[in-house]
Length: 156
Image 1 (cartoon, rainbow, N blue to C red):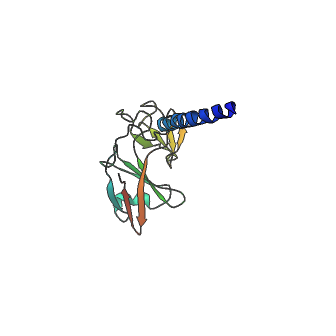
Image 2 (image 1 turned 60 degrees about the vertical axis):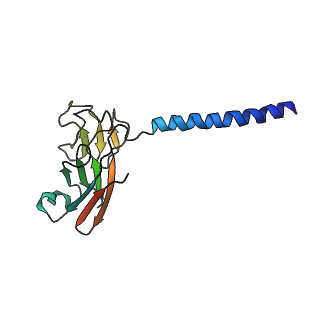
Image 3 (image 1 turned 120 degrees about the vertical axis):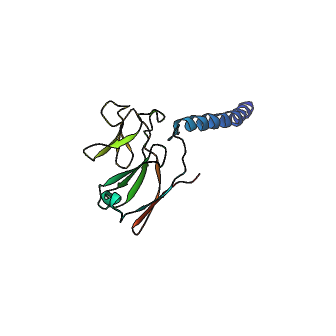
């Protein structure tokens, strides 16, 4: 009987401790957008305007300056959806060079304008990591497509 009592007692002590260890470990590993400052966004795009002609066809993209932390990248994805991506690399995002650009091939997004400018991380056009040192996907914002309008926003 005594060994049963000890096992039950250890379970009541060890299980909460194990839960706390897992909780705090997961919090540190799940900082997807750590250190990218939160910036309020409420921006509307009229797809009929000439500056957004690149968004008419799948594969097109445009940069939006002065929105988000380092600007936005709006991509007309190949499944005919649109994606709003923060133009900040998730690896050392506070560095001045962490601004993202679409590669000249138009196939992927890279950190820094030129090769070797920054961390050389590469991302697919949907924001997932292709090549590190970045470990986390790019931050995306809410985007609603209604008729000829795209509305990009976030909520805190």
